[in-house]
Image 1 (spheres, rainbow, N blue to C red):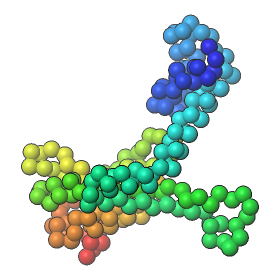
Image 2 (cartoon, rainbow, N blue to C red; image 1 turned 90 degrees about the horizontal axis):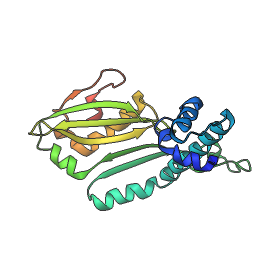
Image 3 (cartoon, rainbow, N blue to C red; image 1 turned 30 degrees about the vertical axis):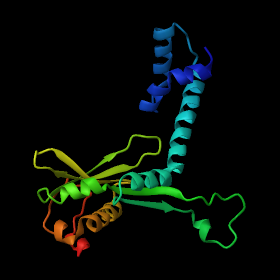
Image 4 (tube, rainbow, N blue to C red; image 1 turned 90 degrees about the vertical axis):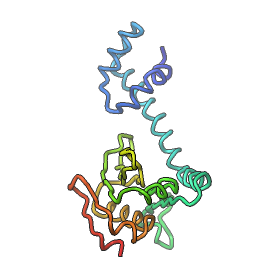
Length: 205
C-alpha cells in the first residue's frame, strides 16, 4: 500500500481531525488492512492528506466572489459583503520583488432576502452567538437568529470572520442594521452569551 493510496483512504479521518496522532493512523492501518506502518510512512501519509485538504480549502477561498455572485443571482435582494486585507507592501510604489500582493480573505457577511422578509413579520427578538470554525484556516462564525410564529429557529444573517472581537461584532451588527432598517431593529430585544458581544443600539441611529 503506497503512501498516496493510504492518504486517500485516511482523507476523511484526517479532515475531521487534522491533529490526529500518527499512532492512531498506524493502529487503524493495522486493524483494518493488517498493514504495519512505520512512523516515517505514517507522517508522510498524513502530510499528503493535509496538503490535499488544504489545497481544496484554498481553492474554495479563491472562489469566494463566485460564491457571492451565485447567492445574489439565486436570491435577488440578498446582501453579501466581502472584506479582504492586503499586505502593507501593496501601498508601496515599487513593492519588493517576489512579494505576494494578492488580497487575502478576511470576512464575509450574508443576509438572504427570504430570511430578511420572514423576520420582518416575526417577534422583535434577535439571538446573537459565535462559534469556532474547525478548518485548517480557522475563523469564527457569527450568527443572528430569530424565532418564527411556530417557535422554530429563523436564521437572519451570518458571517465568517477572522476572530470574535469587538471590531468583528461591530462590523456584523452594522451590516445587520443596514439590512433590517432602524424602524425594525430599534425595538428588538437582543440576547447573547454576554462574552465578547458589546451591543450598542446607537450603531443603528
